[in-house]
Picture (spheres, rainbow, N blue to C red):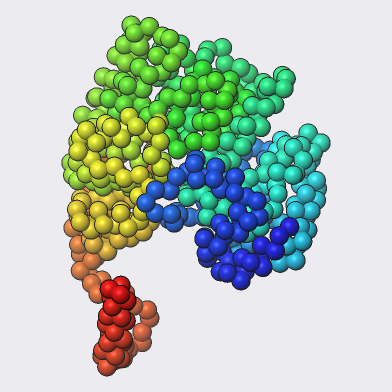
Length: 499
């Protein structure tokens, strides 16, 4: 293996994405990084602003039955990922293969990984082992592709999830889901595979792509039943056999539209991909029509299904009106769907920002929102979202943790998207009125937010930042001296530009 480990350490290590990418390409990982760039284009900014991307793929593996997870990366990264995965409810160990400069550079790390998976591969306990390269092993070219495909019947799946190649943790879920779909598709092509534990569905199925609130798949199943269809598994799946069922479908509903690599696997299996989701009146009507068209169902039967559900959705929306201006941002992939539901509930939503990329499967939602004057920003940066909150001063800001923090500093009510919005149904009649209570309650806190802001005015900023036993010692002379240095530097830079 090339001397990339020392190169990384010398040039800036984990803190330098440019150095890591250069090292990865020099280590023969150019094709991998080019595929990531094609699948997950970054747009105007190239710095991931969600948590470490590997958290997404780690959670997918930890949620699956009979699947073990092994991480290969810097100890600090593995510690952080293990901590946050258990914070979010993981109930099993995370495997770790440590390394140092010698084992990384000489290739001994790969041998250690191979030894670890051989020790873990117990077919009585496991269906699969997922081995994940984090930034440094990826940049050093640790070749997980050379691991055996299976050991004693236990599947071995190696993936690279570098922070300098995968923009968000949401898209890292796609990396692992696609790798598992690819493996399962090849197994199915090679011969008979085990049936699902609950047996095969007699009706044609629609596979649901993207993690969602547990009640939503049940709601989708209810809306598909009048069309003579059934809801298939949700991808990412919870157990290995579900991947066979997911592939054995009539169509795939891209509920979360950023699963680009997974879509590619379904397309390779000859499955049509359906965009958007049954959210609100317009979204449900359009989605049922697209499902019916994909399965060749008559227009009369589609209309019958629409007439069965749309009045209930209208009724739920009319009984759960939302009055106010709301901005929406996040990194889950369902931000556009949430905005549609809020608008049909009566809210004014001038801006929707998502850290996920623009794809063909989000086009219906983008077009619907833009037709109503909404600014839709794909690959939105934190700076984009903060500027909107500061500029518009909405009645409610829905967003990520730093957006919520900034809104509270401004005295604007806010809700954390992941825990408070994603944790509710969005589809069909159940989703129609699900947001009204939490949104209205939050907007009703504006006066309390203003009192809190007044009480804490000036605390924690400027000279008052940090912990003091007394008043800080102000030194205006030092500040004036430093200001002169900055002005002199600026004049020199301007003069250099003119030359």
